Amino acid sequence: MAQVLIVEDHATNRKLFRDVLQLNGFSTAEAANSKEALDYFVNNSNTPKVIIVDVGLPGEMSGLELITHLAAPNKTWKIIAVTGYTSAEDRELIFYHGADYYLSKPVSLPEFIELVR
Image (tube, rainbow, N blue to C red; front, side):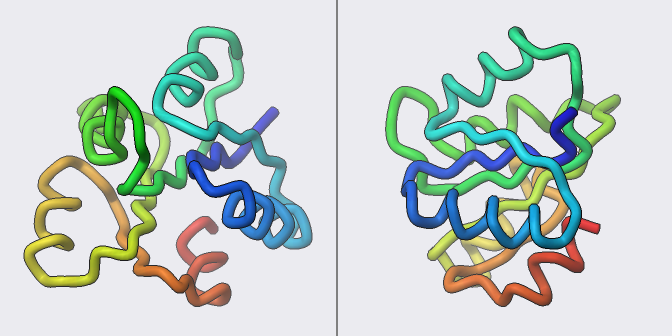
């Protein structure tokens, strides 16, 4: 069962998040884009407890659109948005779309682990 779904298009960032999470006892699943993230929910009966979403995902559905899609009122997971966009307006927009938490890149690993817990 994946406790944390990592949705990040950069392989290096996915590996960093995966390695840090697994070293801290979490199981993980990964998606490189929004389509793969949505496919995860179709193809797996296990629901993650945390979804980490890169706001700047490329493709047909941006990270913000994915967050909106995942932020249903009855959701059972928390959404952590990770982004290089750091203005107050960007942060407000990310929360407006439904993220529960916001982390700016480069990510502080202690803060990252604390939010996932």
